[in-house]
Structures are given as C-alpha cells and as structure tokens.
Image (cartoon, rainbow, N blue to C red; front, side):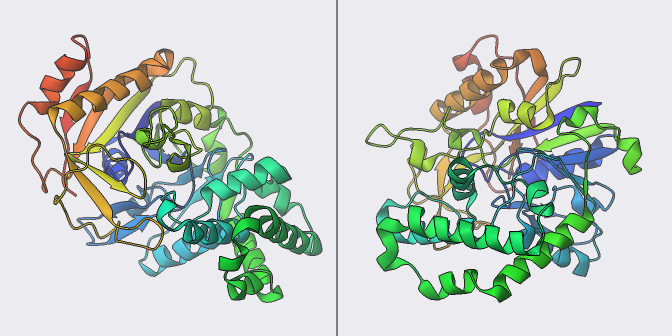
Amino acid sequence: MRIEAVIGANYGDEGKGLFTEYLCRNRPKPLVVLSNGGCQRGHTVNNPETGIRHVFHHFGSGTLLKTVPSVYAKTFLLNPIAYVAEKNELSKLGIPVKAFRAPGCILQLPCDMFVNQMLEKARGQERHGSCGWGIWETQVRNQWKGRLTFEDFLGMDYQARRQCLLESAEWGFCHRLDDVKSQVDYDIMEELMSDEFCDHFIRDFDDMAKHVKLLETDRLLEVDWGKYELDIKTLVVENGQGLLLDKTYAPKDENGEQSVHATPSKTGLEGVIEAIGETDGFGITANYVTRTYFTRHGAGPFPEHTPGMSFRDETNMPNDYQGSMRFGEMTEEYAVSLLMRVMIDSASHAKFLKERNVVLTHCNEMKPNPGVLNEARFSSDSEFSTEITDYGRK
C-alpha cells in the first residue's frame, strides 16, 4: 500500500486540494483519507475536462474524478448538515460520491457552530480567526461533557437524540456563552432548540449514516478494502490547515501566546500517523505544500505579511469571522523557516518516512524567485534532502 500525505507547510490555503487531485490522477487506485479538523476546510479543485470548480469541505479532493472514494479517519469531525448539503451539491453536478467512516469519528452538533459564531462576534477586535464551523467548540464540548461519537448518536432512539441536542445546546449557552449573553442572537438560539430544527438535524444525520459506510476498525491500514468492493493501492491522506496553525509551530503574538490563534488538531506528520494508525512496515511520502507566496486568512501573527501584496482568491473571500486574506512574499529568510519546519516535522517521525517533498502551487500567479528555495535549503541544513517540485496551476 502506497501512502501519500498532503500537508500544508504554512497557515493553510496552500493548494492542498489542488495537489491531492493531482496525486489521485497520477497514483494507482487511490482513496482519499480526510485526516484532521472537519468541514471548515475549503479545498478547491478545477476539473479541466468538465470545467467544474468545486470547494471541498466534507469530501476528498479527488471526488471530481468520480472513482475516488473518501474515508473519514477517527480524527475527523463529522458534520451531517455540511455533509448532506455538499452531497446534494455534487449530485446536481452529476458527481457520484462514495464515503466511509471510521468507528471513532466524533459528531459535530449544531450548537458547536452557534457557540463558535457567537463567541467570535463577541470578541470583536480580539477574534481568534475562526471560520465559524465550530471545530474548537466541538473539542471543548467533548472534553467537558464527554466524548460523543457518530456511532453513539446512531445508537440512540429519537427521544434520546432530541434530548442530547437540547442538553448540549443548553450546556453551551450556560457554560460557553455566559460572559457574552448580552450579545447572543436569541432568535437563532430559539431556532436551534426548536423541534423543527432538531428534526432537520436528525434527518441529515440519518441520511449520512445511510450513505457513509462504517469500517470495521479505526486502523485504516488493517482494513480489507475488498470487503467493500474496492481495490485500493494508494492512500492519499489529505490534511486540513497547515503547520503554522499547529501549536507546535504557530508563531507567538506580542504577549508570547499562540494558543488562541492555533488549532487543536495536529496538522503535520504526527496527525497523519494518528489518523491512519501505526505504519510499521510502511513508508509515508510526506508532501509539504506551499504557494509561491504566503497567505493567512484569519486573525493571528503573520510575520511574513507584505503590505500591499494581493491576489484574488475566490475561495477565501472576506467574511465575518476571518476577515480578509493577507499575503506575504517568499523571501529567502522565510523560505529558510519553511524548510526548517518541514525538516523538523518530518524528522520527528523519521521511522515512518519514506520520502519528503516540498510542492509549489499557484506558480501561474507568482513565479518563484529563482534559487530562493534552493538557497534556503542549503542555508537551513547542508544535508537537507527535500526535493522541491514546481507543481502547478491554481
């Protein structure tokens, strides 16, 4: 089994969807594993054969090829509302979907998104930069109220499900929104706890449970894919976000803090290994993806920022939670930092590593400064063996 990991080298938005689709076109019998975070990801693919452009949230970025299934690793958060909406959108485009779930997947609830959005609005200029999908709030609820998996909810009867939704919403309101209740939108809160909305969520949940097949184990390398009528030769592990959003690598703010602007998920090679299980006997090809420049969409320190630099990005348009996207030049200094964190991340799990690559995307927008990354490679480590691949078009 070949394992290709697609990892963001920076703050996310590097072109991971673009490169995932490239791998699915050029590797034998692929399957895409969604490995961390949840539907907050926005991975864009343009299919040159059909002219279809799609931003993937709850499906792997090889889906437009029609034969590539998606697998939700135990570390991926399942959101039935987002899943059904995207499934229906793809259906209208004539794209069939096939998806599987690991038994350990955590379930996202509507209250997680509501609490996230209300808190971000209340923070004003101190916003964390969340995209409003409730990824962090899902983790907080599971920490304090107990782990709720997709399978746990599936095993409940109708009344128990409604009670779970109402109790979780009440808990979020009382414990997470207590300090900002004056700024809470009570109309939305009332709708969230209505019978109609609870029934809508339960219908979407049942739809997802019906169409997303349950695997027998969380350890994806032990799955007998033949039992699911699949012949799989390549696992393409499509990470969300990027290394500089992981607490291990995230830059600190002026107070020396980084946690509020970092993600709770593991965005590097450690997250890949956790998602698929131990890989003894298997080598991972780790592909660290970067544009030919830097981007950050959301609050938080951005030392690479270049004032006045701008590109149009239809996926990352300004929004209420993340604001506008910022851009930065790929100088030699920052290229050195990029290659250093790639080296550190890959070396920290070297026994699982077969090969590591740095992949450049969006080369049609800004050509890489000749020699910058190669010069940075030798500045960072004279024995740094990463291959640098000039891939792409947006």
